[in-house]
Image (cartoon, rainbow, N blue to C red; front, side, top):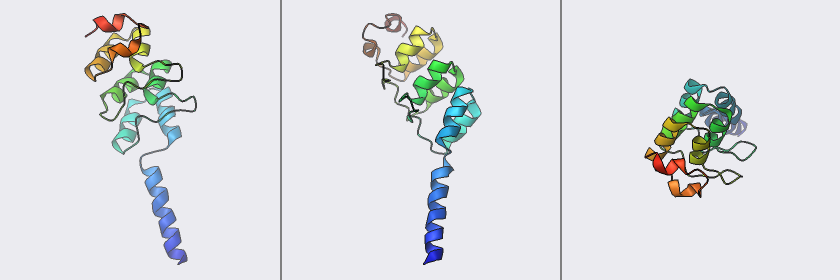
Length: 128
């Protein structure tokens, strides 16, 4: 019985740590470590994970200027590109405001909703 419990705990721990930890992911984002981000995503880490400020990983990458990591996240098929942060901003709004035109175009190619800008960034409508 004890061996079975230890085995179940071991398997549960390995499944949780298989994709990587929350801390690993957000530290890699802060440092724009694309290889680490890509590795974690390929092992099943959720690209829509939020940080302690309730920012999605994509919002966080844009806020810290981790543009290479933001691009990896936008290209990932499971990333939700139209999510709003606590301030009501979408990733498209942030990319547009910060002047990251290639990322704006990439977000639009991933069907980022230009109407979600609420007039916040009129440039976005012209970047198709």
